[in-house]
Image (cartoon, rainbow, N blue to C red; front, top):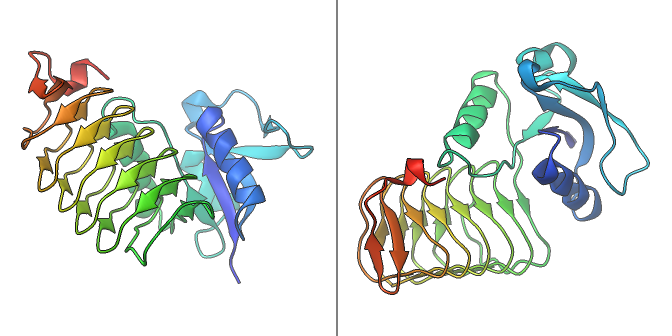
Length: 224
């Protein structure tokens, strides 16, 4: 059974991914990878680990770890409105890799359809009949309502409430404690600020803040 994984990155999120995969999954982490321009050290020792792992240039990773035998996992942060995460995921797919997803054993899921390269941490609740796309991050403690659709490359921070029948388009980003009304569509590349309450559909690339949330003058890409 193929279960060996290379993690993209060597910063906090990659270190967390190593912890979760090592302690709460069937997968074995065998290496880390970064783009060659960011390679500083050829070995990486994640915090809490007694083992050091090779760090490989992403551009040449197939030479040592062919996609027939290894998986990739790239649970990155949502900077530049998730465009960097999307780029790395698409580059890995072009190389022929399959990506794993990690769903915490302490998350509540209901036979949801969940795509590749998702990072779903503890205390998330995914109600029935909501589909999760590829490359979606859900930090701890979110409530994802029923009969919804979350498209690819979306990032949830913590304690977000997404009510039932919502449609979240690609690259949306949700701040801590934001709340989304039922039957709402969140536009592509839209940023919802922390603590905001969204009561109606949002526009693509919009930055929304407040209670109720209102569109701000600055586009999302200038904020995060």
